[in-house]
Image (cartoon, rainbow, N blue to C red; front, side, top):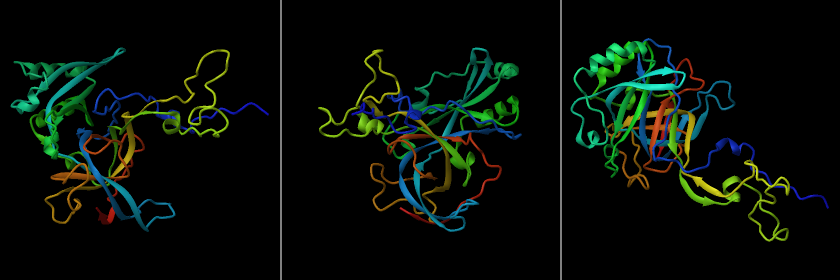
Length: 330
């Protein structure tokens, strides 16, 4: 008999490394698209995952077998309360990377948000920031969202940075300065039919073995003492285990970014024409109240978890087409 073959992980599964637990419940956005428009725009918003629905629409993808026909697809409902613009931050750049040069914050910040940040305006901060715009390479808006505004029990707000693109640095700075202390709704950043990228923390599944974690095939029940293990961890010499060998460990609760999620619906529950809540509300979430969006397809993370939305960074279309939706089954 020949040597027993070692079971290998599924094709492409290594692309999803690392497999360690995320450091925070909040997903991170590390790259931002650059817009060629003259008008500056904030590139990010956020929401909380509520549940799933079925979307019945007309397939508007050209050159596909189903083009022009009825299409039933999965939709994910996100509650998107307005985000508060807390401040503006300017970054300079050199061979060591980005460096924060100044922070200008809004006045009269709500108490439950003010105690979570250390930004305090001093005299002359705004004038000093405008003088240093020559060395600034990137402008970011500091935004905050309160889970309680989405109907959740969490008191602590989420605070993160959102990139500003379009126009020059002076226009970007002036755009955010005018919005300081104001709230921005989801429809002021994204439009129906546009495509976004989502960043979130996936569902945690704890410690799992190689069968569940990597999809390794089980051994025959008489081949070895164990069935749910890898056939071989490697050669006798040299005595080392390569990183490509499937091993047991943490599964889920990972930082992940998914690309090209189309916005099918942007609405508000006060609009009588849109019924998005099932009878009794969504399981593990409840009733959706206020602004919401429906994304085509699935979104990483469990219910009630923060989902960050970023303008599409890959293959952005020249023209945005609004979807032709026939029915939403909740």
